[in-house]
Amino acid sequence: MLHPRVVILILAALLSINALMPIGYAFGLGNFLQPIVQLLVTPGRPVYQALGGTRAIENPEADELAGFTDDQLRRDYALARVENERLRQQNLRLTERLAEILPLRDLLAERGLDQLRQLSARVNPGGADGTLAVAAGTDDGVAPGQTVVYGVHVVGRVAEPLGSGSASVALITRIGDRLRVTISPPANAQTAGGVAASRVTPLDTRVRLDVELGAFITEEVPTTSNVNVGDVVRLADELSFAEAQGFQLGRVTVVEPLPSNPLTLQRIVVEPALELPRLSRVTVLMPPSASQAGGGAP
Amino acid sequence: MNRLVFIAAVYLALLTQATLQPLWELGGARTGQGIAPSVLLVLAVFIGQCGPSVAALGSALILGVLADTFARPYPELGVLVGPYTLGFTVGVYSVLQLRSLLFRHAVLTLAVMTLVAGVFVELVAAATLGLRGLSFLTDHPPPDTTAAANFGRGLLRTLYTVALAVPLGWLLLRTRHLWHFGHG
Image 1 (cartoon, chains in turn green, purple):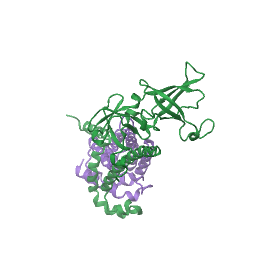
Image 2 (spheres, chains in turn orange, purple):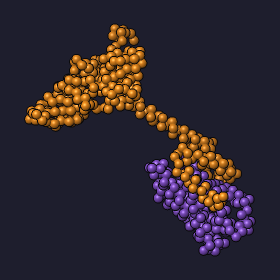
Image 3 (cartoon, one colour):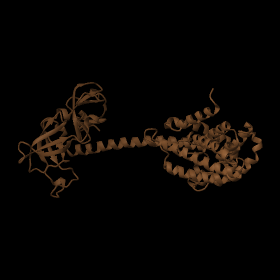
Image 4 (tube, rainbow over the protein chains, first blue to last red):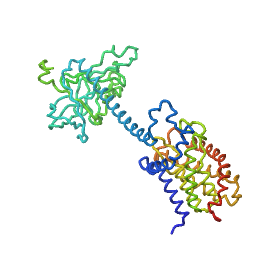
């Protein structure tokens, strides 16, 4: 039989452990006891109020809360915090979605391709290496060979096999070999000579795919070309990914003299600006429907 | 110890603590950050000073739980039971260790013991809340404060409680014969 003093110390230790528990458990006992204590001290409430202990009523901005008990206010506050967090998350998702959609719409309009249908599709987990599994298929009008983008970034192309509600997208870092591209400084950059980026003539070249590196490489750029790390690389190929002309392939991450010919040529490495395998949503560019192509239906 | 008297005294202390707070709270009354003395601590020290040791520790545990319901380190989450429970137990234990050295039935002794116990109470409570802030435990410190600030406010609260302990202690010592403390 334990000595009562030991029992008391064990109880104190247990309650102090309660204070070190995670939020979900630590406040359970206290919030159970609090209404009981509040009930016990109810006879003293008139004295409390007579002494001016009505903080909510003292505060002119809180008159509307005067009828609420402390417990109601605390519960409402907790619910409001949860709702606030939900709305914040929703706001983040919508902001991200807008940042994807608006530049895409502008780019398609600029290239006269705004009649293309844009199908936004969720990316499912479990795509094979070098591919994305998207939750859209033939039922949605998806067909092999259609270009897949995310905002102004090219992602890849719809590949076989194709299901009625799912499709596989081969990433451009797996299939985009010998692509013609243009390299130009970012829109808001100033070149070394102080010329605005928009006034610089883009460098036209071809890149080859290095699957191991997951990047594109070109060794055909003269050292006289004004290419810098951070420059934007856009697709300009008329045959492969023709619909994605003007979309970003990536950014220049390495500029170095070509070892075999360091005086005249330089080697440039281009890496996708996005982590393509980690995208959660993509847009499939589909040909206009018959009614759109006819230009008639509203 | 007469349990009926104990229950009545705890209830009166609880009522006093809850109802007179607007009267004696200093600073930050509108924000709930004011400093108010602890009647519960004075009662715990009184029982610790005059009562049997087991009853004193048991009383400290109960009064500590009640004190936790008044302390709101996490205003938006409710009541956290533990910091003051352990603090009161440790504080009264220190009183039990020291009481044989002092004249136990004097108001001044009660005030000094309240100071000693109060420091232990606040130290333990601030340390417990500080532990909650450690990343390998809950990583959830009390908002808008630090352990040092908590302890600083606790010390002010203790000094205020010592001032209250003089009149309240005199009153409690007058009722000593009702408690049947025996020779604890």
